[in-house]
Amino acid sequence: MDAPVLMTWIDGPEELLTWAGPAFSWPLDENQLAAYAGESMGQRRIWTAVGCGSDEAVGYASLRLDGVHRSGRLGRVLVAPGARGHGVGTAMLEKVLASAFGTLELHRVERGCSPTTPVRSACMSGSVSCATACCATSST
Image 1 (tube, rainbow, N blue to C red):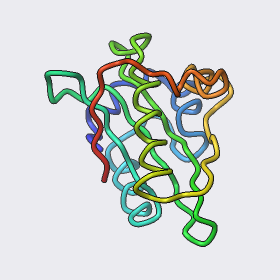
Image 2 (cartoon, helix red, strand yellow):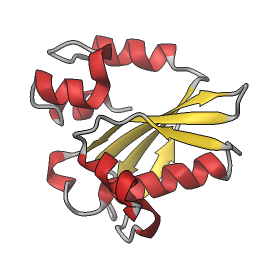
Image 3 (cartoon, rainbow, N blue to C red):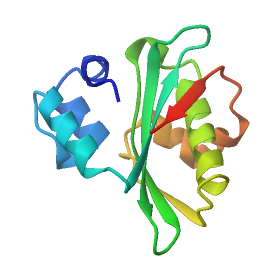
Image 4 (cartoon, rainbow, N blue to C red):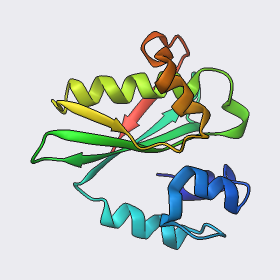
């Protein structure tokens, strides 16, 4: 997770609450993100989407894992402001879900997105399965 870049994608406390719920406080800072990354070790997979033909981060998503039930909870999905509306979120979610049900061999993935998040609308409408955007992902 590139904390300084991610912090520029969140404009204020309302957007922070939509992205992360009450887990973080405004203003978001590197210490909060470092603590989140540290507490998530082994319990969460994190993906950063990068733009085609560049190493620029354009999206972020995480999947909290439940090893006992072989399930996951998708959350903290965020797309860079300049990349919104271009299919990045949809493509990123398709990659995350492919990994969840493929490599990670999960049986179920739940949505943990805010009801007002555009990416959640894509999940609800089923458009995630037909993503065509150019997007590479890396997970940690």
